[in-house]
Image 1: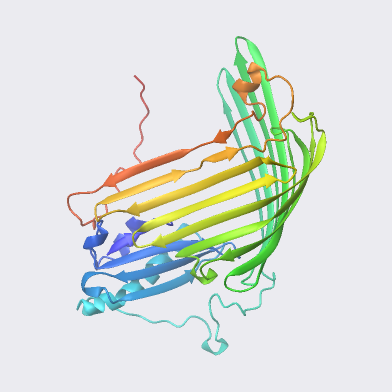
Image 2: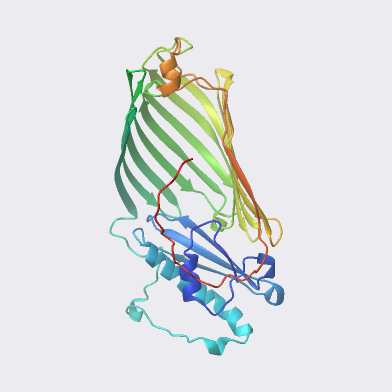
Length: 398
């Protein structure tokens, strides 16, 4: 079996320990069964896992798909136990065809009262919360040495209701950040805070079309926004049915954008406040297949009053197995920035540049990483050895 968890996290040590009737192969081409495991967040806050069993070599005609959902507060132990349970179930046809069915014991146990005909994940089950999920979070960190101190405090409150027909969400985020620098006995204090409210509604039309809108309100000292309010209706088309979200997704979304900005300082275009109208176009592709994973997207937006004010951004993640032993991965986030209408006018001091007290003018942003992996030697990977996993020790610099 080739276990493919490139799209989600798997406790492979636990899986190999609990399922020892198969050989675990690190070369997909050499395997008899390729198991692709993906996961998506569901409306309750839990996850839906999908396991696709691809038969290879003598089992190439065998293919099966299993799905299960986890509770919102399910622990890692509960998730991995459920994953092993469904892996065992999906492997039974392959084990049987290999002639090893006598090596395993099957047990069945009916959970609950069969007269109630209860069904896990049944969309018709009544929910006392009417599918609303609420989350709250407070986080902070502190860092200090002789020349530098940093303090960051953040909070988040959200409410979401997700069904197959309607998706509604509200969120409120706040953050306060303070940094103190001491340079040549000069103390520099940099403080920034932000607050953001967002609301999203998306209504399903059918398996391909969705319409909805986003509302946003924000304040951010770093980007000179005293207050900003925006409204963005849009329509989205998925080339593939939304039911295939775990394996393939290609969406195209378009809509207008209306926003009102008020600035702390006069902007580089002489504005203290303004109303901006524009539009947004985004295209996103996601593929989770036997040969690997691709997730890429493009977003374009501009303002109508001056089409030279635009933003074009891309995001790409690729993890592809080129052969049985060679794989390639790439992640990149380039963008062309031409819409920084919020920048304050005036000279930029060296303190602003060194401490990043405020957003500076830029024409682009770029981040990229890549890697190539080549495996050779034994293709088996059955052994579990947790010794020295958490070894201690310090770090030495020379």
